[in-house]
Length: 293
Image (cartoon, rainbow, N blue to C red; front, side):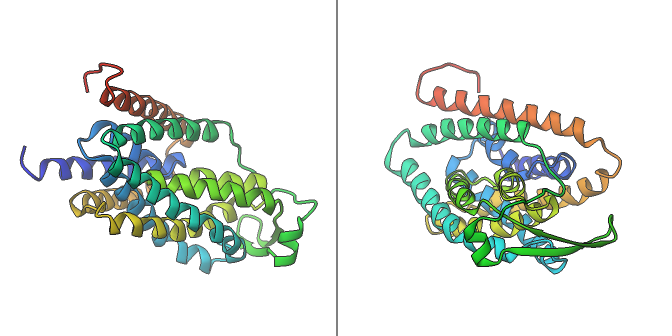
């Protein structure tokens, strides 16, 4: 095939992902890495590297505005990223080491990606979002660090003040999420938001906005690992970033008239399918199963 065929396919593919991501509430990176691994003939290292750049681009484009509005809380982000930035770098190093040192390493990584995606599917299926959680007791770490915040909420026409808790539980959770993001090139919003909202008690708008800030640090650190190892391939990254950026703008407008619940269930079904396909593709590479792709 001509050299431009697969970049064109990537552009169309990521354009579609970009459209459905804002409607469904599912991050584009979570769909890009497993589906591209399942259906495109690229090495998994290049796909993971592109996934990190895509998630980083999306976070960097929205984080400044969210911070300006007072939704992204730097006080929450600071202690969290001290832990997660280390694990995200470690995840990137270990992930690339597996594929470089073992002849069949890429198949093991593909299988692990499918398993992680299945876990993400379960988390997103059962987790609920609480718009304004009630924090009755603040833990010692959060109290000593003075982690509080406030922002003007137009729907209530007032300033909403909040505080967070359970930092001792949140820190190891973010450490695990950072490792997964670095190793598999996945955006971490799928886990950041439930931890911030359901465990720490941050309002949902604060949780989603602060999650973007955390991604800008974690994914940037992990991306340098992939860049230093030559796993950031422009012919994959450029059409993917352009496609998902244009698609996200279209999806943001369609979200006003679409039915998010239906789209979300469709996307979750696609995620489950991608998890199964990645596991089967990895098992095929190891010679355990025979499938036609």
